[in-house]
Image (cartoon, rainbow, N blue to C red):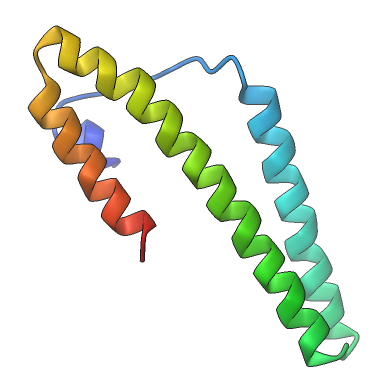
Length: 100
């Protein structure tokens, strides 16, 4: 159960950029499959590591976009409605996990 549900807060946001996010995730999935094939084919380690770095970078960019949108959407709305302390605390916790 997500932390937001456990805390009694369920947020479902219809994203106008959902198609873009899904395209990014599909591309990342393809990259991961490519890495798997590279390992199966005994490809040069540096090439595999380079692809792993590319996947990490793509995931980080996706995560940063989601964090940005969350802060400017959900958190901003919560602050305006009086639930800002909870939303900010939740944002800080997710940022700590993300920054590891």
